[in-house]
Length: 204
Image (cartoon, one colour):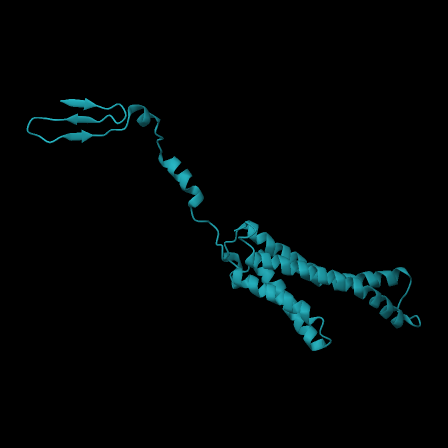
């Protein structure tokens, strides 16, 4: 005696002196419609879950040191003591070195071995540009001042020349301080994003 079910293709076979055997098979239309995966399809499906080819932690410690040097170096410029201000300049120069190691690579410091995501590295590049601009502001200001004096016909022998130079230099001090403050602020922001904001900005 046999029974047939269209939903499960189950066959109940009862033989004399033997137990009942139930065989359940997938329906023919469902089996035909079932997706078939090759090796390429499996690799494509697993691609989003594959490990990143970049090192998400690369340069993070140097980034911390770079950020600290920028903040401390700028803060020390407000201390009315030449020695303390000199330490601040040393900190800013160290930040420039750290940014160069990350962005440009340096064999002796391991910078060239950093496997950084280009989207992350661009923040260190922005930091480097701000710091380079920071160190160029004062020399550029001096060049502008000298150029104006030469264009006006001063040769340094005129009476009261020293006082006039000091007066004009003081007039340029405020704009230079403002520009330096903006560049330091941007450098600190960019270095902070490079160090701690990689994943939150979707860059890692």
